Image (cartoon, rainbow, N blue to C red; front, side):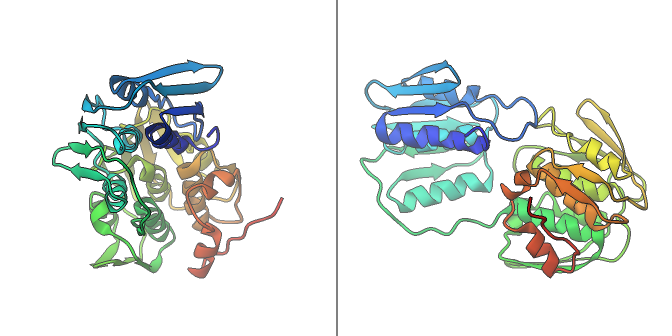
Length: 332
């Protein structure tokens, strides 16, 4: 858990099933303050006793979860997932207001419903969980990873060329498609197949703002910034989700990128060329951004800290090699 923050979802699943959960305080990418207050306050409102001490979160249910109404002050994906998991086997109905609306929330609900759960996703961020007595085994296909798709789209836009992505669901990232088209990409969307073609230097984008779904995802901010480092003109990116998600910027600047940070705003003055350097991945998406920058940089770039990248991409170097990139992993 100290390595991957998403491990916090074990809290709701273990607690809902056994009535007790003792977890390590979560770690993960250092992209700013990401408190789990919403997770804990929501569970407390459902009758969970929680003690935080010595780096542990000790949760206990004296009786059982009988349901209730939880209004989230922010549509947190993790908090929404934890509440759903904790309440699957409750004794009553739980309603989440202002719940996260990311596609992964619906996918979780679909899986649990196949297992015998009773979860419905309403409009405008409302989730209703009716507790059941038990869940059973089932088969379920996980939805395509939209951030991985956007990462490879960013790579093509930066390095030029044409790539076809299969098993994609563009409805999950429609807010991003116009941004790639405005940079000069040609995109053909045919059901679960997307072809992206780029023949020129990307154009700058005047206003990119990360927002909760269905807005532009914060996880795609760093990969897109790597593209805009080579854009024609000045681009503006506003990070509205996390306050410290620009840790990849100093590493990009080592490669010749011209970026200025003012609070939550990044001003990117595009350069025609980037240059090779020894850089280190500061986090998962920042590491992907460095790979994208290196694909079109002059010279040989060496990227350290790739264990960050491995948490979100399966053999990224093999996929890019198939597409024509000169990239390899060096065993240590």
